[in-house]
Image (cartoon, rainbow, N blue to C red; front, side):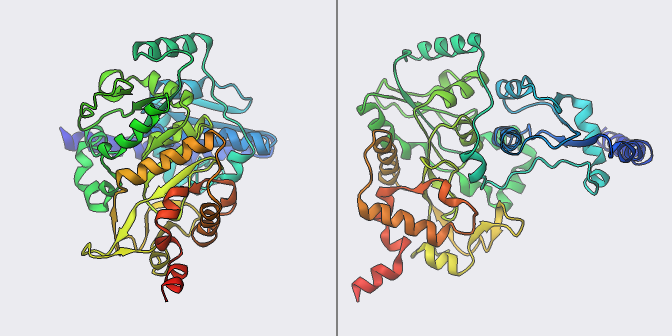
Length: 415
């Protein structure tokens, strides 16, 4: 049965590609002087790409305008989040056609070997360094009045009133990918994707801090390994295991005071709505989230034997980074096996949470922290054009771990 299915799929792709090359492609070339047709795919399978890639398409149109005589057709189906997908589908912009179609997606996918070699392919690609685009555009997706009422009802079910504020927090674990595509578990382990995972328990000090300042802390996650441990704090809510829905995933991310997370796709949803994010356990030291109010603290790097913590300067000097020759962030990176990643401890996560709360209350970091943030950008972020428009390393992290950021300054003092 399996071989028959594979054979049928191969035959479909061959016939579809042949029809495209012999009939559809010549028509597109004939139309080109009068109507420029661009064909692409929506990135629907993972919520991060559904949010970031699709949103960036509209933000770039805001800034640059739609090219004359151009029409886009982008197909997608089986979305990672139904609510977000529907919000994109209902956007109306002349010449931008987003279509939910299983067969449209299959046809375009089968055309890719030829389509990608032509001017008609629209890759809908992002670099993860669109600082300029975020700085000069606004979010395009909106909730309807009925959806807003539904969202308030969802908050009320969790004991959160319309005048209360809350922070979403999330730690990536292995359960989502393994439940989504269990057949790829061995491959993901081989490429080291599990190194992105971290402990939700390490975020609980920060959650307590949020509640002590009068907010609610809402634990996010579509599929999680385990419920939160009992904290005895009713303002820390395990939404992921008790209340979770596609709709509330998006609503909470759009209304939170800020989002405290780890490197996982859902972090792109609050970014989509221009909500501030504080990113702990960030994979690499040489990347920051896109908005100027955003913060991040990178994971620590150790030698493979775990005996020594490596400064970011040493790692950079040895070529350890995730910036590809195509000018985009990539998980494969360069020399990524030189060092091991170690999680941030709960006190560092608490620190970046306090930094964000202070920033939102108008409390500036100390002068030395601001200097270190500037130096951090100069040393480790300048490969990304426009990085000055993006986020910063956390102030408390910078002061505490100065020896990892500017090891030359620290060694000079020691001498």
